Length: 94
Image (cartoon, rainbow, N blue to C red):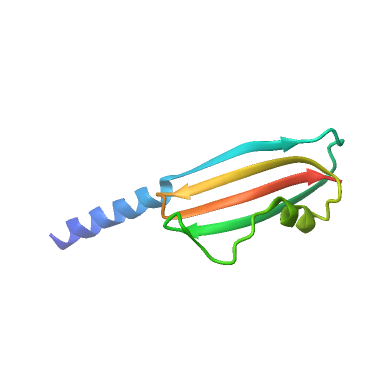
């Protein structure tokens, strides 16, 4: 009986880890030429609402990539069973 319960819990853990989804969406594009620099900023939240010291702003992503002329902005959202949610801002430019 204990082996059966352990097997079920192990199976549920595998499903939980593999039950994540990720979606990348374009947010903005400018008339600036596409540069070779990429900057990112990430915010991770727990239970979908608890974000601590999170900054996934466009300004922070551009600063992290050393970008002064923004070409495109994308947002990537990842969720693991809605328990751990990550929002990543991806900025390209010069």
